[in-house]
Length: 64
Image: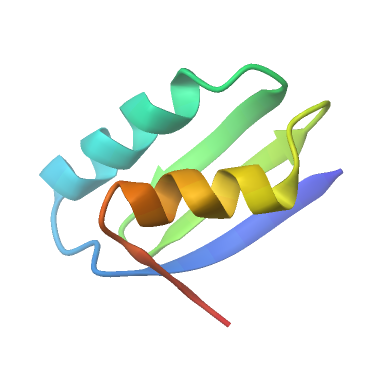
């Protein structure tokens, strides 16, 4: 399942790198792209809720 999330609080390339590293460590997903304010990925066994929780744990907010 493809998933695109808008992320609030990402303001620079360091933020992008921070989120990318965190997501790369999650089994069960394939990372598509991480940009300022947006992430695109494909879920295999990871869930949307797990991805959102991880991003929020890293200090960013998901835009509804």
